[in-house]
Each structure stands twice: as C-alpha cells, then as structure tokens.
Image (cartoon, rainbow, N blue to C red; front, side, top):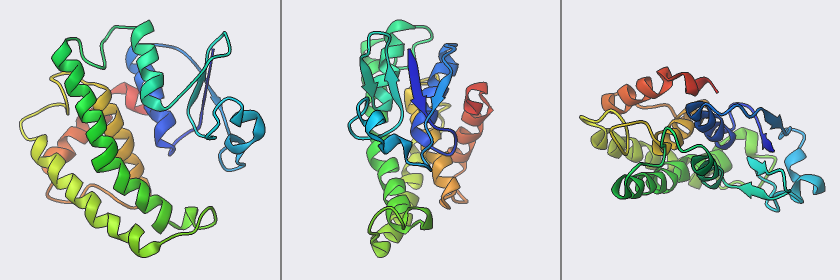
Length: 203
C-alpha cells in the first residue's frame, strides 16, 4: 500500500496525514514533487486521471483519490477512534459539516489561491478582481464559523472528527496564502488553538 502526497503547505495531503495520526496508523507518505509537476506526469495520471494529490494505492493496484474517500477507507479498516461519528446521527452531522467546510470555507480560499495569489499566476489565467473578492467571502465564512463554535469544543460533535480535520487544514492553508483568522473571532481562534495543540496537527 502506498499513499502519494506532498508536504506542507498542501492542505489535502495533510488532511490524510492528520487522520492517520489520529488513528495511530503508520503509513509513510510517498512524496510527489508538485513543484516539478510530477503529479501531472503520465505515470501519475495512470493512478489518478485528474493528476491530483493525495492518492492511495492498495496492494491489489486499486487507487482511491479524494481526501474524504481515502479517510473513509481507513475509517472502515481502523474503526477506532471513530472520526466520522459513531451513531447514525453523528455520522450525518460529520458529513454535514465536511460539506459545509468544503463549500463555504474551502471554496473562497481556493478561488483566492487560484485567481489572486502570485504563485498560481503562471499556471492559469487569473481573474484577479474575482480572486480578491473572495477575501470578503472568506471573512464572512469566519464570522459564521465563529457563531457556530460559540460554546462548542469541536465543529460537528463533542469529540474531534473529520470535520475538524478539514477545517484545520483549510484555515492553516488560508493563513499561509495571506488569509489569516481575523481579529474578533475569538471562538474560531480558540477552536484553532485546540485543534493545533493536538499531536496529529504536526503530521
């Protein structure tokens, strides 16, 4: 079994590393050099036709891509501790919050990265006004998250879950590209401090 990924600041490979660390699964990451565009090579596209990271290759040659799908595989093979919820309601809540993070938080961060950040200017045609507009959208997402986290230790459940992993990797990547958590959102900052203090956050 091989897990193809990339180091910080790449947020999606980090999600899987955090998840595996929480599970206590020791699976070294096989690095793919994104700066050299190795993930877009014909050899790697044979494993993941979209040329994206991470990708998990099983011993029988089956490949699984997309972070949530990879983490669900490991949730089934290593069910403790449950990071997608233990009950029917908990599982639904985690799914709800993963989707909310992906659409309400990751989308504006990703659009800023693609269309307003100098590191991506050579990779695609940028629409910088649109990219910059996502600063305000992401600020609105932070305001919403701050309200939701009031009186709560974690995002979806009383325990740490995949929803927290998705949010942590997104918020940290946003900070790296110039979108920090804004002043005044103390509940969000407190949640971030709790999530960052977990040993898995260093994965």
